Image (cartoon, rainbow, N blue to C red; front, side, top):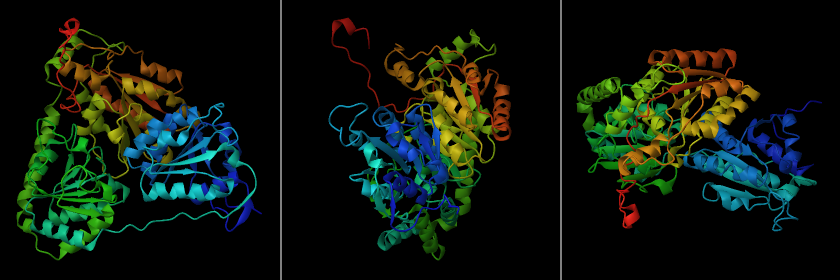
Length: 602
């Protein structure tokens, strides 16, 4: 008799806790887990394969958490990460925090020291629940082996219902024994559009608006609501701007798309929302970092009426003052509002053509500016450009301007591409150049902003969607934190393309030393070997690019190797030390020194 490993057993049965744990994951459709093997969960790990579950071993558990994040954001399914109790679990804190701020349904399984030894300071013992309490939506601690399936199911259900990480903490001795259990079926929530009163108020405001603007946020992607957002925007003739680092929440080819808000976003988007009389914030918490002044513009409209739609009621009005708050699913709410507005005469109907021309003009002006923006113009960057003229990269060409490189990469992007970006100066400038046609294509560390995010995240994305081209962006500092996961790609045949901007510095923080500390550089310089050579030594492909005309062809060749030959490639791009704007100009103050010995340090 054969057993279908893709379906969990049915009914109350005798089984071991390990079997209950694994069968509950089967019921939730788990087919991949990221982590490093450990004795703490080995009894369960032993039956992963016959259950149809593959454990993908990584180099470092932080990478496993990021891979689970990328996997979940592409697939819409749970991402799962597991590790050895103690140090294996503590290594995951940073990546689970990143998943928390990205609202990603990651389940981290944290085997714990055995119940007979807890509190004795034994080998690899730690209090693991406090480590994650700030970065999880729910923490399930298995209190008895008989409750293994119950707690496992609850962690999977809560990760989806609350859209964020959950923790399943299991004393390692609770995997053993014999229990009677029934495997719970996943709970699927049917989310609605919101309350009748708030939806009616929102429709009335939109019907009276003369210059409505829609912000399409991450909630639109999570709800599979891009088409619903398009329909609503087309009914209103409203420009659509992406919320910060959600550039995939509206197709860039659509006439109403205007680009992202926030750091290094689109001037077109900012100029248009600045004139809005009604803003519909669809599926976004309006995070503070995504609405700060940029490009010298304090663009958030001061007099506009704000309609905010979010599935989490705690986000409504939290950051920005709002006129109407709707607790609802972004897709369902957009569909409901479109239906209401369809039969109404709108104040903005009379100006659709005029507004369409304005949208196109602002977009054209921004594209022209990007085309002509070859390099940064601040005094420090100009000095660095002059300095680079007298230097030769170890590859023998010239140092390239980051903005020109980003523009060439944009032009060479394949269809259906997935891109992850790390934190850092050049990566953040990339926000101006990254455009997408479909959702679940763009991944960033969001408000957590940790280095070492991009590369492992794109590995997880590739596992979830092996048919799609996968590209990561990282500076040389962040790359140093994550390049060990090249071994994961090579060992397990997960081909991706990594673009490394080699500018020999911690750019984002160094910019603060330029602006506030009179170019007194402490710990900001990086002396690196060739990352392309390191990649080749690790079994991947590696290419160094130091001529602008080679940027696009190098990316196309790497994607071809990824998709047709199963090869991972590191594209090392030699960049000048010029720096874009700081993340935020209000983050630091000019230094004051009161002691005589430090008086020159101002």
